[in-house]
Length: 353
Image 1 (tube, rainbow, N blue to C red):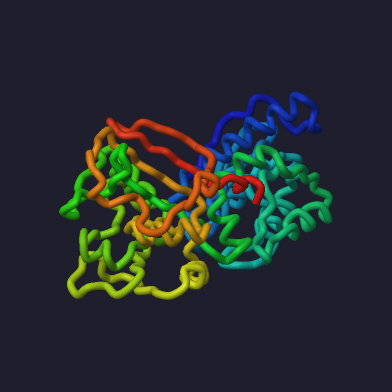
Image 2: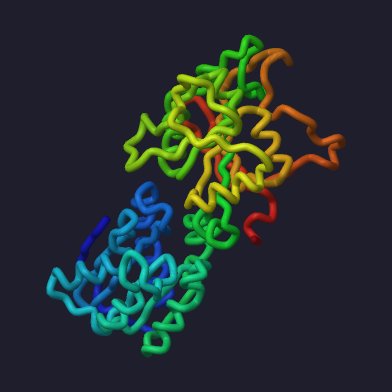
């Protein structure tokens, strides 16, 4: 994703109040560029960059693995336009890399182009980077300012940051239920609790995820495909089943896993699964929840009642024994999708990790 615009004067200023406003504004544009490649870049981070010269701004985002990074794209756009980056400011959501991977180091390209200031959203915890990009730039005399829009950038890159810090994927538990908390009727039927808008959003979550996991019981009961079909998808997620896949199931080809859930997550992280979407069933949801392994809960609530206690619950297994033991999270967002509500929750204290 690339973009070029005319600059509104020379913004190469020290961080005064006006400069801070410009920093926030350009970082917001870098965030928007990063969002446009959310389904493209993984397992690399989805990064946006904005290069501000005296003449124009050049906006880039990370390409698919093996392609140029956001910073390199923005610099190349300036070069293609015959513009000089000497004395320019570069805004990037993540610390530029300083090591040779499948692409050359971005820090080298920034220094070679003559950029004099780099503004960074968050530092990269990847052991190959982890402050080395900043050190390389500063050693070359480039002014570096980090932490601009840090919270917004950290939220956008949360799956990547967790994966690099822990080796495990960011776990999103997706649930769909009636208002009285039922996910299926007494006869086992569950299609469809929610409407098409909510289902489309669920497919968007699949497209953003590197893998989708369900239990073998869900495969036997629903025979899901677990593909992103109702949105434009640059790739399809790895399909993962806890247990054995029945012969002829639509989920094939799938990876069969078993054992301790922490070990399962370690194994998926080693396969470069940065975000894992879990779609059930109730036992799998319970076990992940009780083990504290869920990073985000996405609950789609339909304006419907099952009207009894014989339907399937959101979780199957032992729950809180007393009110004092209730799990309490924080609401990240609430949106209406058609007739349904989409509620996103995070564990309390998650923002401090």
